[in-house]
Image (cartoon, rainbow, N blue to C red):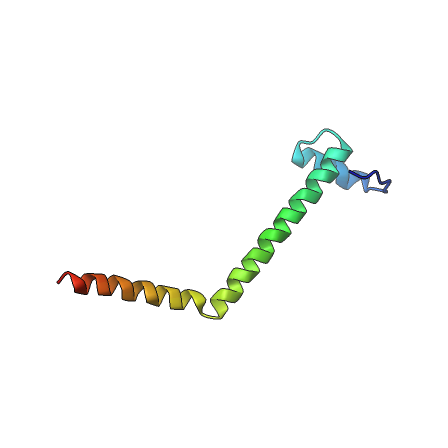
Length: 77
């Protein structure tokens, strides 16, 4: 952990502390940083899923599943 001196917006910090339920400035800033990183990682994952959908990967998987189900049904007729 590093020690850094920064100027903070006191009003925003108080609001964040209230919303997060944190007791110290340090906990508030660290929680905000961790939540931001997690949110950005989820956003990147969602973007990757979107790109896969745009390329039709899920359509192909759905068609393959449907074909497998049909083949299973046909095998037991």
